Length: 101
Image (cartoon, rainbow, N blue to C red):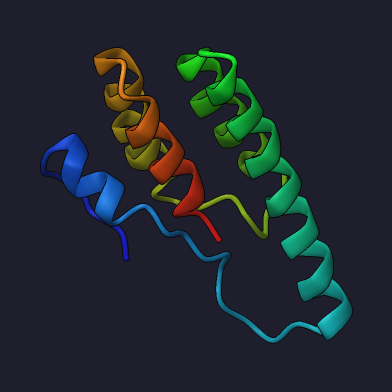
């Protein structure tokens, strides 16, 4: 689910974001899963390199590029991810990234 307030830790717990609900063919669902997976992989590589801010921004930019993955809550979730990046919590940012599906 989404969280509209709370601490960065609360946002990590609530980070999973599903694309807007609606009927989709299996091909479209598979394509979206590949797209989100690639975005997460790029963000995790940036985490591994120690660039936590870029990891958060990269994932948010990737997800905002497609209407199926752009969430109205993405800005709120981005703030939570950036709070984790500012705190220097690599594990927190990685958990935040992995929460997206």
